[in-house]
Image (cartoon, rainbow, N blue to C red):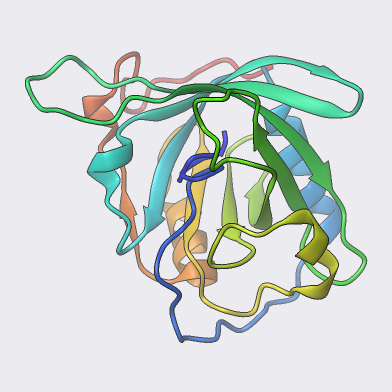
Amino acid sequence: MLLLPFFIMSFGLCATERKVEPKRPDIDSKQIYKATRKMLNSKQNLRLLMVSSGIKVDKWKCLISKYIGKKDGRIYRRLETDVKKTRDKFDQIKTTMGISVRKSSKYYPYLKVSSLDELFPRLETKIQYIRHAEHMTCFVLQAASNDGGTIDKTENHRPGRRLPCALWGYNQTRECEMNFVKMCGAGTPVNLRECTGFEKGKSQSRN
């Protein structure tokens, strides 16, 4: 999941760095941590809903994250494409991700994400800051650095630059999209009508 891959380069986040310096709002770090951890621990599938403008959405159509289980403090989810059959060519993804949700004494909570498959050697452990989270609805991830971030840089880097973001959740909502724009700037929604198993407005059970 994520979470682009994780959700694109580990929830999907590597692109040209932007020069805009976003203002850091007052945040409830504890609430963000708890809300995100609960969604990642849920058996409900998570979908990629929006990415920062400039990232090619078509390249990562219909990314979906499926819960596998948890062990030794890590959450395991399957990241794969879930696009309807078409004649168009698109990149297919299918990999298992190991995720750790971490608190930070200085900045935003963050995810440590790694691919467990040899097919994705670029997905060594990456850092994704959790910029925003709505209870059992959505969360916004932002790359820790232009190359996705590494664990040894986490405590020395703060999310101050306008780096690419990804919005993950269960369904597209105006509130989640507006919070994405507030945190990360302009974004491009994923067209979920191209994805299998998705019906707009359909309620889904969430564990």
